[in-house]
Image (cartoon, rainbow, N blue to C red):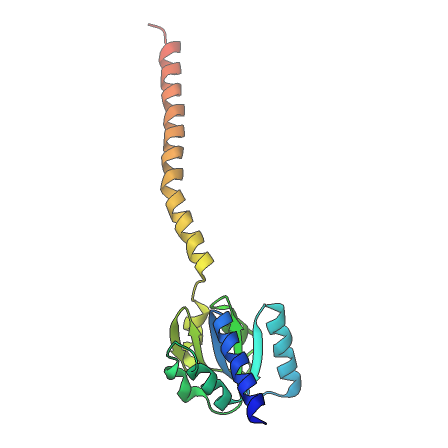
Length: 172
């Protein structure tokens, strides 16, 4: 590969890392062409971008960015694919769904501005909630007390109305 081509790939990788909020570094060494094609199809269906890269080019692309990605450098061995996503747990769920005998295997991930190194982090990554999920939970929690107050006021009004009606109907 010519130096100009390498620089172009490094620039493209850097731009893609900037574009997506989360990415996973995955080991696809033992995957067949059919398995890789199936994984690409699944990624496309779930709005995840899959790119198979050379480790040295990815290393240089990560070095060229402002943020420090040095915890990921040791994971860049073997055949590597990167799964880019704007939803933190989507690639983890996909890997868990399609993985057979640890293939494809998670090497590392950068999700929610944190580094997760090793395949043992897959369950942790699956349980990460997206920003929208957290906002929805907070709204539900905030609405819960208001719903309780309204329901208590409504039931209290009905109870009070019932008591007044009973007292009014009772002979003196």
